[in-house]
Image (cartoon, rainbow, N blue to C red):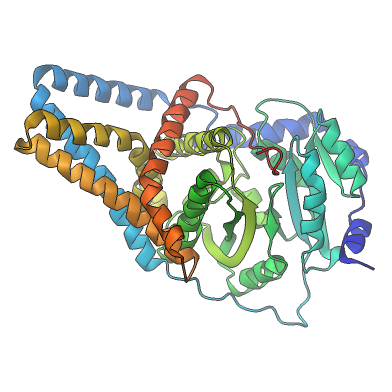
Length: 476
């Protein structure tokens, strides 16, 4: 009997009508949507900005405008210096994390005689009918006893095509009733009460985890009782064009360099959007996912740290595809940057409480890392403008020209160095054409800046809108 046949027999499709009938469906949907907002409103993104934050940003904007009107030259010097210092701080932090975040130590091996627990896998899918066969193959390839797998595909009620595809592959599905906000975290929250596993993981439609990933996760949890969540590395193995190659460098930098560095420092870790392995009880205790945050896992990683849970890196990879079209990439990166802004707004509502929860070091790392990602993307084009204008308009002399040259040098160094670090961490040997692509990374940063300004506009106009990323070669 093949692995896929065994999997299908253990998780054969049946609409969960009896399961849902055993509970109040309306109550289940209400809890999936509003439990965090009602029980821990200070940790929910349902309120975009608080009154105190609105006052702070208004006063800051007014002060900057007044300074430019009263002392334009001095204000320009201070603003450029502040942007440059913030950008340089982000660069220094990332270089430091690259030094600290060396290759992770191998996780403890699982003894052959040790019993394996039930492991829940949630795969939220929306308009992914074409990806269901690949999902079935990826799940069947997992080296884990099928009888111990508790697999649920999470499907929206109005997605008939995906329903049909799931049934055709013999997989189980939980159907989420239509409601707003229509987001991945709300769907996962709705499905979570049906989970039977001691541990659980969420995979996306295009994910192809290494076959032994669940066994590695079990071994890691058992040898690290103080860890509540393990983040597996995400890796890109399908990058045929320039934008997808840049995306692959991004992933290598994030999951091979930066997150391992944060883990070594025991700092808050903004989780990636998939392949997060949880102790199920710890996930529930932390308030599960925020359905109003469009990068729910980044927010959850910070919340876990604030509540005293530890997150670590799992030495296992999950392979994904990268966007090959610019509009697909732009929508995805806009959602990520908007989610980072939401996460920062949520967790800085009460700075003193945040300081108490994660300490001075954790606070500095969180603001420099997550805040630095947003700040760098916002100021990147402005620094280039100041750099060029400062040199041309001042004739190469004066404080502004010096700051402009410093900003330009910082921009070039930051972009090329970070890309080189990612590539060196990703592979041991690179050909000359592959190394040459590092030189184009500054162009990629302009795209990131465009996505960040688009995210800021969406945050003001439509904060909870989830821009769906299509998967599969046809959808790209």
